[in-house]
Image (tube, rainbow, N blue to C red):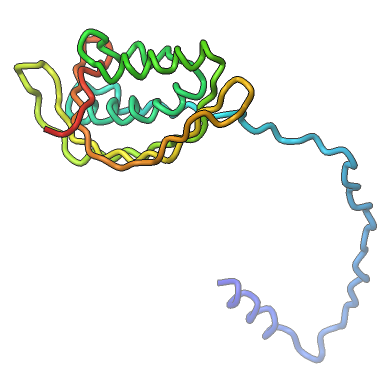
Length: 190
């Protein structure tokens, strides 16, 4: 369309048309901004970032169970590094989930010894989710977990332990208690 408008304007010109000289363009000389010699650094998060709670956790079906299990397992390196057990504890059915309580106890022991946890990022993939198991009242899921290497440092910052990365499939059982998702078990696939 713009080409057609331009063509009709050009076609309307003839040698008999008066020549109108347009004024020379005015160039304003604005000074370019001077870079700040002391720029303010953009803050970056210190340490691990808490995973984002998925919206699907608001569901009370298989999809919600899968989202909750994924979120819980993604919390692991964050909990180990920060000691923030708030959501871990809220999702743990302590009387049933030995993995959950053992992980919590391990973190508390490290904190008491002023040890730090570095690395251990996880990647979680729900391989299969099953319908509601009426016997347990929850949803079993088979989850493939990849965890990167982690380093435990003592209070002086020296390496105390190096945990190799691993990949494995786990059976996770999730129950919605009417308010929240709870982890019943995390174990090897049956």
